[in-house]
Length: 365
Image (cartoon, rainbow, N blue to C red; front, side):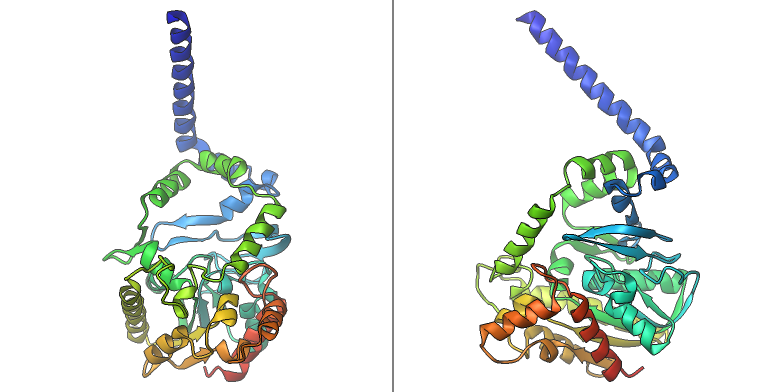
């Protein structure tokens, strides 16, 4: 028994020493190796993990000068390019530092699932012939909008007009995931996210190996998850606009505090823009969940329409474009099928075209 115990102890000791040595090697050389041999692994999860990177000020961003043909979203692959700032852009659109129009938002504005030219920002960019930038990135919300805009105004770029596409999920992200420090830096509220971020920032190989062995999901699994999302009537990220049910534990007894917090953040962004003589416009749009369950004059519309009074050059309300007060479930489902990716909350190509066309017809620069 003692002999077996010694073998177990020695095995565990070897294991933990090996892990420690690997982490030391990773800390010292991981980033160099991943960067040096990046193009040799360009079709793997290593590369996809590499181009969505942490940022020391505004939390996360896209890596600069990305040109990648096999980015996955759902069951499809698409082409993505970024400029020197990490803004999703035309592949030839590099080294521009002065813009007429800047868009910011989350994955809807980034245009996840589509190359730049097929997103609403890309379509607008192509048709209005103004110098345009897309600062939108997946999982952004107003605290990050404020931090990122302030960072680039102080360091890199000039622009004349900011258009914020406010998402239904922004209330959740701002309240439950991000904290804005006094020096306008974004940190994670959740401890597990801070630990994950620490490893992503300091142990590149470890982080990439995690994505290979633990984060991979089959297309069938992804499709099932997306289908479950759309079948959830009281989806916790979106039902705050139409439901007061206590089953929505996202903001249980704290919804008004969350709203006050997000309004204060947007007011700080408005003041920052005003100090720099930059116009502000706000756009709001529904998720499929709003089309199925909400009213045209949604709480999301009421909230930001009121905020925009005497502050915004434009308030662009897309709810009436996607919705009506009809209770015909067939019409609602057909609208979702026409304008959204199947089993997903994001716009498809027709949705992007609709957003862009309405913007071009109604936006006043």
